[in-house]
Length: 508
Image (tube, rainbow, N blue to C red; front, top):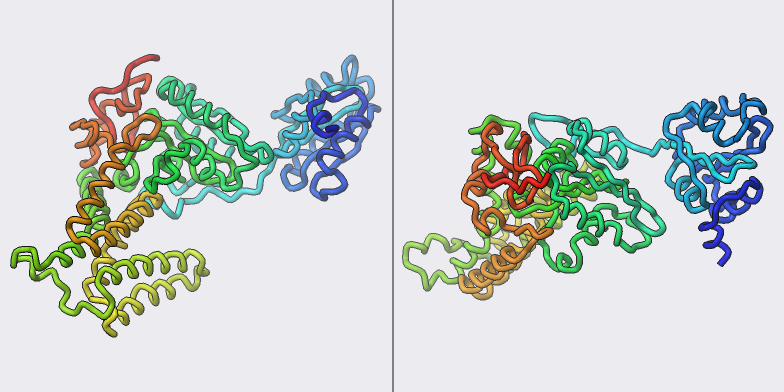
């Protein structure tokens, strides 16, 4: 019981007693990377404690150089106040009065300075997390546009957002999550736009997370935010992005962002079905080109979703159909039953995808060629698969890869696999039942009280038209009314396209 009591206790004016407690809790002497450096400041014994690898060496060298030059008379009348006000040439400095505060800060990266005779520690934020340079996200590439993307360091990510949202009302609240990991999670919103009830709900759910740590970062946070009702549902209720421009657009529209340290993906809340099938590329092209790109993408997603199971269902019920449908049947059905062919081909495409993920970059192209061309061609030539099976599965794969949201694409793939099984066993009736069940599921889904199929259900004609046809930015008149934002006026230039004429209730 001594450990917890010491962690909750306040620091004393005895340096040695403080260091004894901190050595025991932090494992100084056991862990090589937790460092205690003894020094003397103005004739007083002192010590700095930090984690090696998380501190900027040049910054701390300058700080210590100034501190070591302090004379005894310079510390009068109160040593801690004198150090803070006159002898610390660093901007980010704070105080900590308890062992818990000191320990949490040290493990987060800052340096703790403890002076004999002072019952508070000085926290010097000279962190230098291992980080890579911002680069364009692999999953959200555009032909025109910015090439920077979020990285694994939360401070860099918030800076990328603030660079695009220079609004005094932008709020970035830091909430530690995880009893042991204490991972920094940022709740980001524009105060006079975002719905206050939504902000309060997300904030409370983040604070209510009870878990030892979140090494899987945003995925763990997502599951806690959405609760048990989303665990069995393959369709994503949140949208992830690694693009700062897309995140900024959603902030202007009234959405709330959740950024997790160690993750380059930012959660956007709330989202609908249509958020997952639009892409920033549509807004980087001329209006007509953007409309064309959007319609092609929608058609590809729809055909990949129902195309293969619909063809399979029609072939299954071919004897019951009018003579005009006779051309649908495969000329060479293959040795394997047609339904099993589709199932195996779907699994084969996923197998190739997984192999490409784990293969070295130098081998990925060759492996993709072998999997996609040779295996399919040989399977058709030896009579295992029908040529039509290879064709429709290839088209479905193209539609899947054309889906901007990887999570949504995976949900479509799983749904299509179920449709294929139902179509192979029960024909058009089975496919119809599967589609009906899927429709009911989508109709009943909500994300933070926002209907998943809005603006289709509940119907909003103008907003639905804006979703289907990419609108010129000057014609965007209002934020999505479904978000119930504080201010109805727009001011975005961006990429969700779910606006309508009603706006939100102005409670600002």
